[in-house]
Length: 202
Image (cartoon, rainbow, N blue to C red; front, side, top):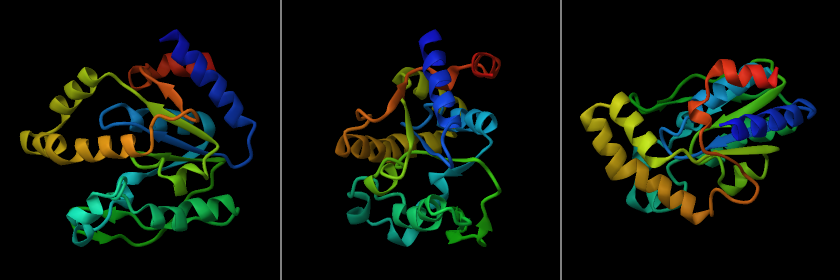
């Protein structure tokens, strides 16, 4: 755990020296991505964009599309609406996808911030990966992730994770060789206590 804190401390110090950095937090489901992204956002005065808000609509979830590594995420729209304007120093105007209603919500403007974090699986497809300054990958132990899924999901949702979403993630990781040499790999970051993280970095 101490090694993870030191790795994060050095990464945060590096990020703070950058101008308008873009950070990605990737990894399998229930690995702690959202928790880490939230804590990093507090330390870095950053906004967080979730890849879950860029899932493709139901009509596009064909077997052919889902057979494409990372095809469950509309990475083109994510790049067009978020990454490209952020890199150009322009305002970011994006629409979240409402999975239950199967529609895009009204466009919203990214709040003023010093850094941008992309959080979620599929943020390491080439078009997105190549825009990032720092890339975190959470390699939390499978037994920990399984316990979290059991605790937080309904039986029906858990079955769907096992049958569809986890295999799609695994295919994406395998196709792009993730985590690759450019990733900062963290194995326990999702279990770090907030007070420990802030203490060593602040």
